[in-house]
Image 1 (spheres, rainbow, N blue to C red):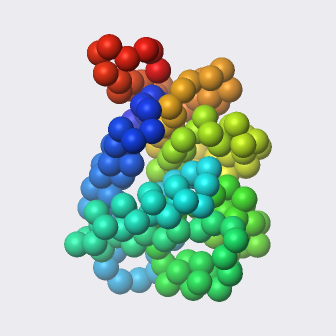
Image 2: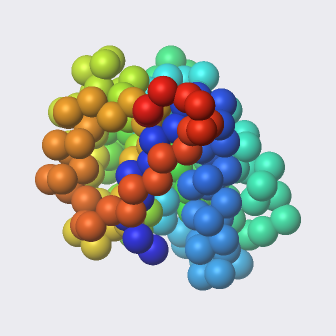
Length: 180
């Protein structure tokens, strides 16, 4: 339930680090029937990463009632809208399409209790800071925020200071590796 600021190189298991606790937390409170709004939002910089993270989480959640969907640009809206209408618990996506669906009223973020920024440094390098701020402002004030990044440039630390509530700092690296 704590905010987390995590530093680790690509390929070190960050998806499992945030995904398994996220699924555990959501799985304990997932209704089997009835309407569902997304309760977790995972922002990633690219379509490829969105698909990878979503596939990993869907596989891990396969024996639970938790539903995961992927939303990104470059594919038809209909499939994504149908998934949202059926109800999902976790949305993994890229900022542009997420904002588009939110502004259209198709993506309801009012129940999002967990917000994850994966590869935050890449998102900032790609110019997504305004989009991140827009989506962060659209979720609940008491959202649990988890920000993961291979590097911790000043913009990420400033974002963490401005938006996160006393985050736990975790740095994963080999003993002989240069500082992350």
